Image (cartoon, rainbow, N blue to C red):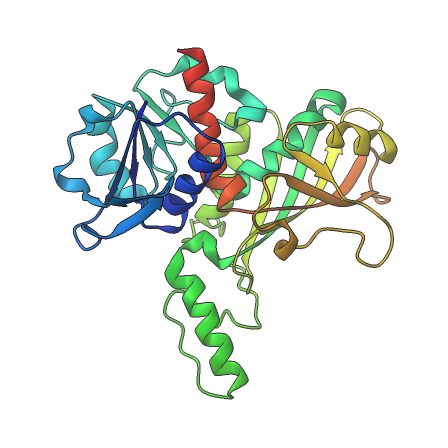
Amino acid sequence: MNIAIVGATGNVGRKIIEVIESKDFPVDNLYLLASSKSTGSKLKFRNQEIEVQNLETFDFSKANITFFSAGGKVSEKYAQLAAKHSTVIDNSSFFRMDPDVPLIVPQVNAGDIKSIKKNIIANPNCSTAQLVIVLKPLHDFFNIKRVVVSTYQSTSGAGKAPMDELIEQTKLFLERKKITSKNFTKQIAFNAIPHIDSFDENGYTKEEIKMINETKKILDNDIELTATCVRIPVLVSHSESLNIEFEKAFTVEKIREVLDAANGCKVIDERKDGGYITPCEAEGKNETFISRIRKDNSKKNSVNLWIVSDNLLRGAALNAVEIAEVFCNNN
């Protein structure tokens, strides 16, 4: 198996390399691709140093599978070209809502890979990926009617520069120096910004619209969902507060049982100080963690949950490599 990674020097690209190595994914040749400014740099893989090649001049017929992790504009320009020779697994938002491109979270809808038409498979938004992994087993048992989700998203979801800016702003704040934001609309250090991506005419942001539309495509178009997405001063891992309304009655005990048995989920839910998972504890872990499980006393058949997951790993790189594993098993 020959693998190419577009955007190999970025946060998610580097994480894909780590996941391929940790999973012992079968690789004969690994091609690391990036823009011309990164060409010639080297990244480690299985005790080797592999030189980064220029994306613009790469021959995609060399690769059986190509991961794209360089943003929507790069995917728009190169993914269909690559797909003429190589199966593309795209981490950007560009193809997600294309009806001819399956949008896959293997724990939820692996069977949809069989409907591939353009030789492109889309990876969902990182906040959507961890959400549907939790919703899927609950939907199977209790039939979800409506979801209200508020996200608390780390700066790594926006890239390396925003992570660096959080660190720099934190230093400036502690030194009582002036802060000027470059990658955010307002100060991110010691703050929370209820704004991720651009606004639409109805007041929702694109990030919120992605969560709504992608959840419906992956899981069930009949589920009603509304979202508020917030950027917080955390480096890695997204957190989400969920309120879920079911068609059927449930018990908290049964919800714990269903989620703890579900692939990709782990319940950490003790009603005591520290009996829950926070972003720093989820970093580097494969699971989506579920805590604070409790009935919503204001509405029948409704439950509140707190979920946390490593957005670079579970929400992006790991999901992409798991898509590749499912694809290879089907072919």
